[in-house]
Amino acid sequence: MGINMENENTIEGLKREIKTYVLRIGRMTAAQEKAYSELSPRWCIPFEKKQLNFVDIFGNTNPVIIEIGFGMGDATADLAEANPDINYLGIEVHRPGVGKLLNEIQKRDLKNLFIIEYDAVEVLREMIADNSINGFHIFFPDPWPKKKHHKRRMLQRPRTDLFAQKLSKGGYLYFVTDWLEYAEFALEELNETKLLKNKYDGFAEPQKWRKQTKFERKGLAADRPITELFFEKI
Image (cartoon, rainbow, N blue to C red):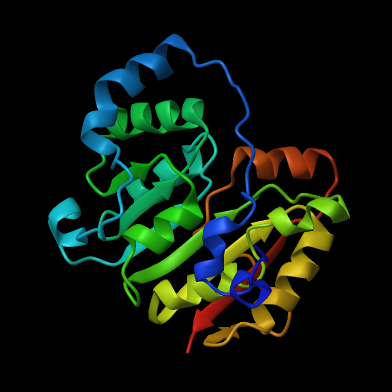
């Protein structure tokens, strides 16, 4: 049976798409294991093919921000703590990072931060209603530098169409990377995405409210420039 190549370039075609991540084995510390075991039933939302009701989850109608690939979660916890009137949903597949962020949620007594441990593209398609998200944070994702791996990059069409579909009017997509070539690539893909408009003329100014991440510190230590993109749904 032949492959319908036209369908491969649609949002539905994402169902057969190559994953944007590789699960890397990482050893969990005792604290991370304890937090994961004890706290995940409370703060981790299981994946299922059913749209989320954010009022049921957060108990309010505050804006919802999704962060994709939060790593170890320190910057995510900082943002949630600094903005109690904003709801945050972190999506991550790296279990040690999930355990670390769960520990931060308990330590800081955060009420506005939940986690989904699953493939972000699947989560967006199956669990997130259209026009329901106020912002996406994609900070320092895997740049997949080899050309043969570019198809794994998170920010490219038709994935960018999926982000636009889920954003509410006026919602934003905020992307930060220490890989300049990826930033240039993503800028082209986002410019070609209907309903998204660049807030800046090219690369964005650093947003003062964004917290520095572990990967950002590594990039700066390696003398790689930090490049940002900020697009809004029109």
